[in-house]
Length: 562
Ligand code: C2E
Ligand code: CA
Ligand code: CA
Image 1 (cartoon, rainbow, N blue to C red):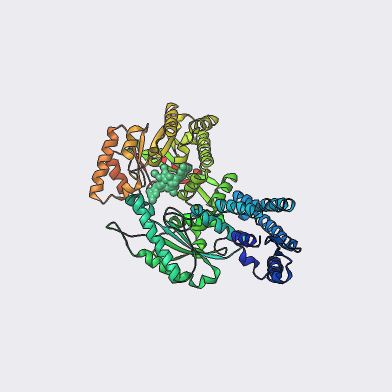
Image 2 (image 1 turned 60 degrees about the vertical axis):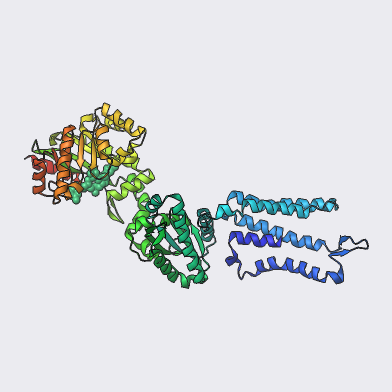
């Protein structure tokens, strides 16, 4: 029981908390001291046990003292496990408790039937249960790297936060792991990981840091350093960073590892478990690779990082308080010599962060699912605009609305779009939906069904950002699309003669397929003229107007008509 109590404290990883606590110290040491003293004095007193005249081991008159002492450990252990409940998974919690009823019932049995020596047996059974449920190396240790696994890291870190234990973590994310791994295949990637793991282990040993080493899948390693070794943490991070920059040779391939190495202190830099995990997974995407050791405190102080952390709340709040606004950017028809449509583009202005670019909030909303509410909001706003009297005076044929990938994958997208249009009495010819190649390349049944349903209802589609993906030719050919929007990257290549050839032929190919073409991102008269000469029907860009609020757009349209 005393040993088991020590085991519980270790499992809860709370030694640092008990240090210097007098009463707990007494609780843990006094009973065992009593037993030890009694056993040491036993040859003189024969109070605990003796060998009787028949050479049989017999318990002495004071043996109950050992039971009382053990009972005090039972009480303490039970109390401690229950107090630290949140540190353990349910299955571990239960198996940690099992020892008590088992041992107590064994003691009871042995009291009544002294011939049944079952105490040790029952205790062994309990220990085996603990061994197979809690102390499972295969659950805690990664077989390839022989470092701690993700689950072990998560358990340890959760405990640290609950126990307010300060640790320093060196986060190492191999940024180019997925591309390297797909080139190497399974066996060789395993070799690579093993090499990296060994490098970490060697540095850990040479510098005598005694850090916990973990491998978290997908090229993520973590080095967890206890507070008493924090003076070495920066040096260790530098050593790791330098070591990882050396190229690695695996079966005649010379590989260069690109790793983000970052030092974070918990809970000072990173206050809770959830933030730690997301900080780790987003490290490579939130900071560009510089080759230097990063500091979590710097990254967290950075605006982009803060924004990324808060964006979900900002979006919810903006939706609730209608702080999103829809801007419009006119699209010029070369043939008709006037603006025939406009693209609706969403804007978000936040009190704290100011203007937040749509790329940022749309990406976040796609991840959180808020994109569906945002999509509904844009559609409602646009339909409201189209159904108003002012719109009729502007002489616009239709408004283009962006659909994101996540929206296209929604089973009830078509019904929802039609329902909102019905609500405002908007006819389908007034709406054009822009989808991206990414959405098109997902071309799963849901998406195709949505497109077909909406096309049948009379709504037309544009393929947005054409030229930025690689599956574009197939999606253009197979989806019911009437307009293709040439991405600005095409336009930016105007001085590249070869690109101009690609562009000319792309336009010709699209024309042969009976597509209309919108050129995006045209910023000057010269370019507008060039594309008009290439037979592009529509031109959109800052040359005519930036995206502007509805009222400004109306003014713009009225002025352009006169
Ligand atoms: P997009 O659909 O490709 O939108 C065109 C982007 O190009 C807009 O950026 C527009 O402001 C910008 N642009 C237009 N003309 C020019 C030009 O001449 N020069 C330059 N440099 N840029 C020009 P914006 O508004 O920042 O939107 C970025 C992206 O965010 C959009 O790209 C679209 O994918 C997404 N987005 C915006 N609003 C919505 C929305 O309501 N729903 C969805 N799902 N996505 C949206
Ligand atoms: Ca667009
Ligand atoms: Ca575009």
